[in-house]
Length: 380
Image (cartoon, rainbow, N blue to C red; front, side, top):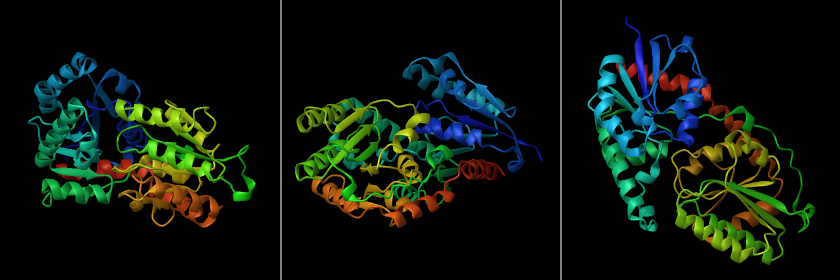
């Protein structure tokens, strides 16, 4: 039987979680586990391609259009990619689930729930931003409708998206992302509330980009309110601002509640391979997002061995289970109650130990094997 050439559409991937996912499934690719595959061609910009691992089985494809602006990239995606695929590939894996060309067969992937949870669109005042979401939704709708198979990364996303797009007859698979080993360490935090003071506060950390559904401003208010009632806590926020009005809102509340920069520390950029060092220097995790597909940051937080206060919104409970302290991320009072619950019940050894045990379910090697196996079986 002829071995397959799989093309991977990375033309919409930039320096985000999508790039991390692509890097890891390629880095953990094992030829012995995929005997049906001869070649994997990755299509993308030079910046993306140069950041990926190199193996003999991998081939790169770029174009000057993919190294230009979004308009030229779209020209390549719509009009030129089909010609290349028809001559060189047996099947296409669309990482962003946005391929709208004529080539078949295609396996799409769902990674962005904001395209579907439209209640958040009302909080976005920018017409340009809303138009971008709508266009990306229509592209994904077209891609998934024509796809021979679809990969989801959470059961929540599979049900939500399938219901909206009526995908019940499609071949689908839920394949979780993995976790890098550098995030996994057993933090030996055994302190209780009495061990902390305003000179040595309980240090919370919240890692996430800044957007309307990330709720950093509510977390800041909750932390400030706790200090007002005598709780010795501080907060580190890490993450770039991807929606400017949300960034302005966060900075404004920071200045209002902590004008002397005493207990709120905002760090806009940290290299991905250094994030784990920040977890190890803190005492507790906050994850306050209202809209996720599979929250990689939450999985990485579980690996830190720290106690976690987490948004109650799905799919967070799908992964954290009973081993977090949950809150409504849109209500400051709910966040406060969860944080008080966490610090008053330290060290929460059982919950933290359970989270570390769960990590055996999140292996990049398994993710890679299952992904390429699913794609190969679609072509049979």
